[in-house]
Image (cartoon, rainbow, N blue to C red; front, side, top):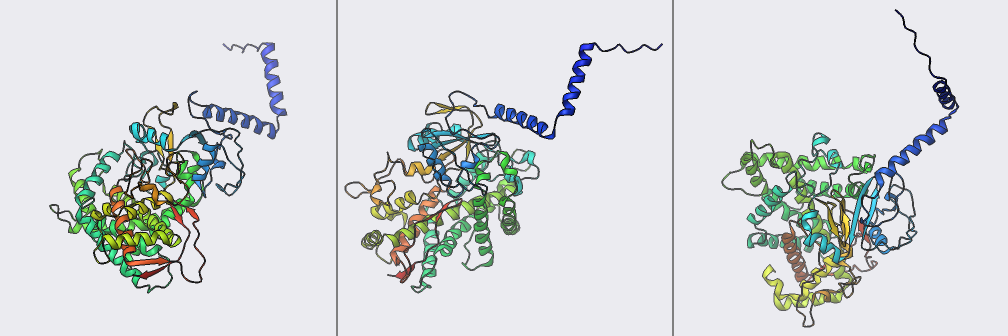
Length: 544
């Protein structure tokens, strides 16, 4: 039997009628305003400060946070301005448009900025950096997840992009500890910190000197020669032998490394703001994959050759040692030893080991032609202690206090890595009585350490006496942290120190460097890339 539907109460019918009437009267603009208001509400809920004791910082804009404030040409300057409360009206160039963010108060040495909905804590100055990376180093061992890694092919699916990240970007959950132990032990096995590797660096220094002698005193840009020399040290460790400077394979590796670093420069914001939605925007990061694939193709050929010729009982280099670890780890699904990760580890070592040392040496040569009195004093000390025939060794370092001081001052003043690679807090922690919640991205501003006015007599001048006492003896300085600090400090620090001392001392032992005649004096302009390089310059290498 059919039962009629009960009639709606008059009040409900009236309300429904009013709703329909309002909906019909809404314009497209009104709907957009409502959606925008809801989006702003969502933005506010996502952006709310997580605790009352979090570090202060500039007020973020809806949806984009402080992204417009970030200066891509000079990220270090951005951090310095906020920490001092002196953000000026300079034009920022993050996404090809300008934005001026006025800051009315001083935020101090630790502050918080936002990109999208991701929080970033910036730590400035030696005192706080020492606290974070010293006594609380274990709290800062993580790396943030980088969606851009998927673009480079370091994983097949985004859901598992945490795997196969080499060593620099690896997290503590995907093999960083395992890979760091392998790198440290293997580098020591193949001579890091020992006479065997030191001898190879000395031999490469002689090849570099021969290359410079071939210029016959004519003006030239030293960049390529320096990069080739330092690249060969990494090649010796990774591939078991050096290359001739004009070898086609070697030139491909050097060129691909340079192009990758150039492309990375153009995507600094995407790297720094790694976990925000900005990582997915179209841009120069799409171009990097081409050079990355070229680099990978060369390395895969070398790995295949090693697989055919290696002797398990006698590893020749890092590739042989890694392939042996792969064999040992077969059947272990949680291991980080795999052929894909071998490629990425080689890229990390080759790129990081070549670029940083080369750029520091370039700054050193630039300083020598700009400060000829310093160059002359270094040469006099070398002549008196070593002479012009014997090759410098690390045993000579303690006998050459002024030369050692000059090398350290070059590193401090050049300041080639203004910030650390982003960390991510492993757990809730405190710095300077501010709370930094777990999974917060943290960047330490190393420039503020190397030029901390409370730690250095003349922080903004090139002053080798920073590392000499009243008697002219070399002294270590607590705020000298060019290799960073903590658990994530540079794995190849000892190798870099060996290269810097032997290359620099050998070059000044055999050449006097000067500005070419009728050429303008080179500038000390700083070009901000993955590392801070000097503007291109030419010099003359006059044999002594």
